[in-house]
Length: 386
Image 1 (tube, helix red, strand yellow):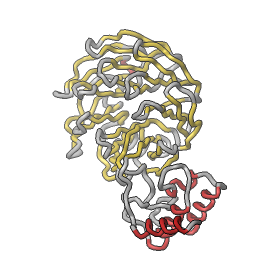
Image 2 (cartoon, rainbow, N blue to C red):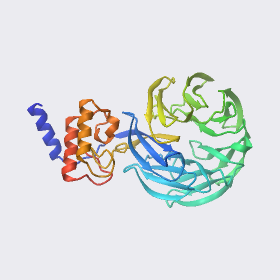
Image 3 (cartoon, one colour):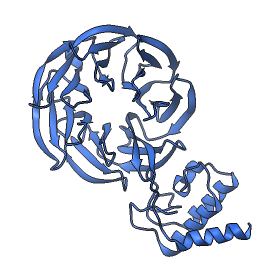
Image 4 (tube, helix red, strand yellow):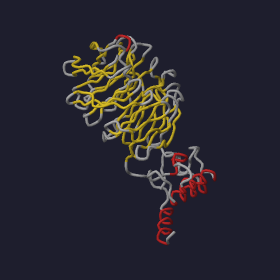
C-alpha cells in the first residue's frame, strides 16, 4: 500500500464518523411468510437489512418525503411504522380488520388501508396515528388501492364484487363503483392522473379517470395479480401466474412479456429504468423492456409487496460498518468475513454492512472502519460510518 494511501486512510479515520449526504434508492419488500421487510440497495442489488414487523405483512408504502414506510400486517391487524433514517420500527398501530393494502396521500397527511374482512377502507391521521374513520364501506373484500396524483380520489379493487370502488378523499365518502373483470386484485394510476390500470380476470382493464368508464381491456393471460406504472408514465408492468407484461400507455398496447416463475408484486425505480418483481422467495430485476438484469436477490418468504423510493442517507446499513448480523457489535468473525469478501472468496451479500460505499465490494479502508468499530464500539443507531 502506498504512503499516500495510508495517509488518506489515517486522515479518514481521524475525521471520525460522518454520514453520507446523498440519497440512496431503496426497495422495501414485505415478506408475507417471514413477517419481515427486506431493504434492498438498488445500486448494488444487495439486501442491506431485514426488519421484523407484524404477522403476515401484505403491503408496503413509502411517504412522499421518504421518511416513513408503512407496512400492512394482515393477520396482526396492525400497521408497522418504519423510520427510514434508522430502518427500525418506531410504532405499531391498529390497521383495521384484515389489512390488505396501504397507501399514503400525496401530502403525507393521511394513510389509507383496505380491510378485507370489514369490507371497508380505513383512514388514519399520519400526525397522530389515530383513525379518522374505519368505516368507508366499499363492497365485498376490498384489496388493492391507488390514489390520484392530486389526492382527491381513491380507487379500490373490490375483489368479490368484480368492481373498482371510488372514494372522495375530501369527504371520506364512497362515491360508487365501476364494473371491471372478475376478481380485481390491484390498481395503479398514471402520473398525469388520466388512466387507472386494473388487474382482473384475464385482462388489464383501463379506466378513463375523467369519465370513470372502462375504455379498454388488454388480455394478459391467467390470473393477473399486480400492476405498477413507471414514474415517467410511458409503461405499465403487470404480473399474472407466469409472466410480467410490459404495456405501452400511448397508444395502449402490450409491448412484450417475460416468463418468470410465479411473479407477484412489481415496482419500478424512480428513473423508470428498472423493474423489481417478486418471484418465489426472491426479487428478479428487469430493465424497462423486461430483459433480466439480475435473476435473483434472495429475500424473505413469500414477498407480497414492493415499494421503491430515494431515501435520504443509506439503505439500511446495519448499526455500523462491518456489523454483518445487525446486533450492534462487530466481531472478529465478521472482520474475517470482510477480508474474505475483499479477497473475492465470498460474495458481498455475506456482509452487506461492510460495503459502506455501496459499490458491490469491500475495500481496505472499509475493513479498517470495521476494525475501528470492533475496538471502539458502533456509533448510535441511525448514524453511518465512513
